Length: 342
Ligand SMILES: NC(=O)c1ccc[n+]([C@@H]2O[C@H](COP(=O)([O-])OP(=O)(O)OC[C@H]3O[C@@H](n4cnc5c(N)ncnc54)[C@H](O)[C@@H]3O)[C@@H](O)[C@H]2O)c1
Ligand SMILES: [Zn+2]
Image 1 (spheres, protein in one colour):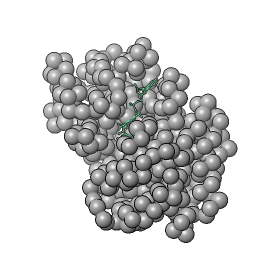
Image 2 (cartoon, helix red, strand yellow; image 1 turned 135 degrees about the vertical axis):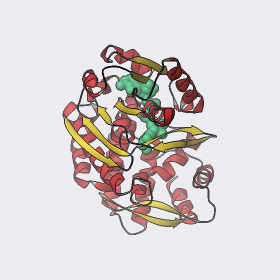
Image 3 (cartoon, helix red, strand yellow; image 1 turned 180 degrees about the horizontal axis):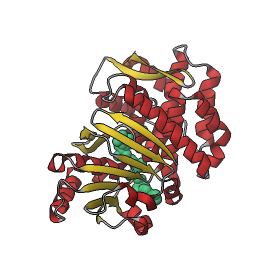
Image 4 (tube, protein in one colour; image 1 turned 45 degrees about the horizontal axis):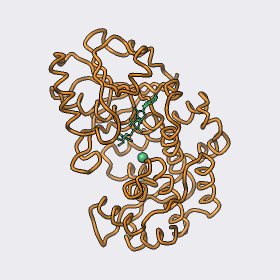
């Protein structure tokens, strides 16, 4: 097991990479713990939960809303949760986002921690202190920045994760490698088959390098003023594709990263061989690199997402493999790129 300490303005957080859910009891107070989890995770792992009150939520992005938050507040009143209580979210990014939000707002904030059970939540959602829910058709519209006391990343839990969820996590790992760690990129090229098989040693290394990179970026810019934007590599087009084509997040950002790499090459930064390496790695992992999408609709979604028109947008480019930069790019230029790509 490896530990990583993250210092946030709202407090410190410690990540335990390779720790087991079975040891969760050592991280929480002996009484007054409430576990928030979803039905899938409860079904697979409730035998390993420590003794605690359990509140189960549903699944999918559509339940990440204020109705679920209200249900949780009501249950917490029923369970007489007070300031001495401890909240643990056991699940993927959805459970952790909601549990963190509820714990941060109920009674103006309770102590809380997470056990991340998806690859995506281990490499992405577990770091950064963002907690929140969707509102009015917008993702993560209502929320708080607040660090969990701990995050346990138990690789053993990934064995029951559906393949498409594993791919979502791998797409974010490729993103981390592309923006900030060329050595990790080469490691992925060599070990992608083992990564797909969820080889324990390989996954632990991938999670460790990812959280190290994300925490370094977040430490420099907790509230997303500049540096943190680099984590959006592939996400500008990715979100637009996700919305218009309806594919999973990981698949959409895979295509988004290929478009952003092509634009980086076009702007004279990324070498053509490196654009090809990115596309080829994503392909070998089984992620799509081209998708049929309606350019006009995707561009409209992108403009709506950024809430601006006829302007420049901050776009993450690769200066080289393992080094990202943020540049303002006119929407017109983005239009040309997607026309060429689709
Ligand atoms: N807070 C942040 O910084 C941050 C960062 C990235 C993403 N997110 C959010 O995370 C969410 C996506 O998270 P996710 O991809 O983990 O999705 P998720 O939480 O929906 O989990 C995916 C699916 O896997 C199931 N599952 C979870 N763990 C399992 C396991 N061990 N075995 C079997 N099934 C399991 C879940 O029940 C669910 O059906 C989005 O809402 C996104 O906005 C937040
Ligand atoms: Zn993402």
